[in-house]
Length: 405
Image (cartoon, rainbow, N blue to C red; front, side, top):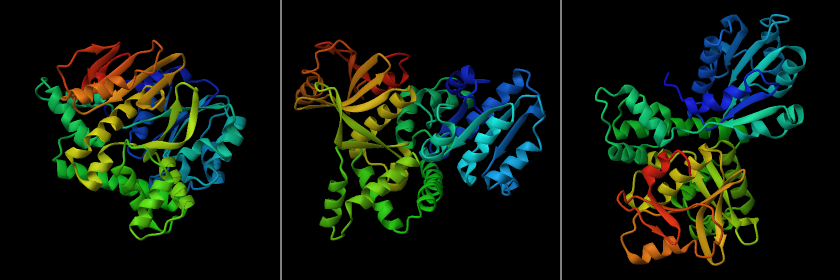
């Protein structure tokens, strides 16, 4: 197990606090490992192993715990009265009416509860009803570039890691942890990602939402992949299918997109009017939960690199707990506005800045933004260090590794 300390640092202040800790994220993003890290941390702090109940609901050894009642009975038999127990429940959505059991644990036992789940509906509906104000969410993402370098260093015989080469590997493979704990040929890595994707699609989308038209679901997802970083609407998707002589209802498109979002396979990014200071409700953008999904399904294509670089920057901002929007400044669009409490940053993402017209367009996107928050243009050029009208250029690998923005 390779430790991901950033998640432990976020979780430690909440240990023994009267809140259910909910770890959410796409399948194979590392939630189970984070849960195991918590387990090890508790033991290291002197908690006896008898006080920790850890259950992985995807294991056949716990197949009988498929209902709230069965789960409650199992835990009740193992809780020691008057002694704090730590419950670590992995992929809790596999248990029918699980939220009733968790609510009863809070009422009946002295316990500290940690859950993981691969569907954002964990934090809506019944959970919100039963645990309103009594849970805190910790999104878990696939590896950041910084984490991937740490994984590489942890298994390297030669401690000298070529960062440029590592970044290209990260760009082509994405950040699923399983791909970076050993060496894989690209074809083998994509086969692994395909299996992850198939599991996420089958269990967290098709089965959970009882989707019958699987071919249409995958076509919609492929459309999203082909248009990563482009303004998007369900009507555009519907019109596209009409041009392919297929009639698709707009509500069906919205429903399938929502199902993919809930499984963290895609992320919707709304637009934000900088002048009006309001979130716009049309023409959002979509990004993937990990860029490797696109390449595994559709193959790597250099012409797609612009959207995938945006995807990498978007995920890095989300890992750092920013709320992310597409910026609208008059007739200009800014790739990202990232807001975290009283912080705000603006980012333009470009592949290359080899032509003056490209430089003017990317740096000029900020012309109508008159505040003094940090503004960046990030691209693949490693030797560009200019600051133009207060807008700083940073190479994308450097931007991903910056401690603060």
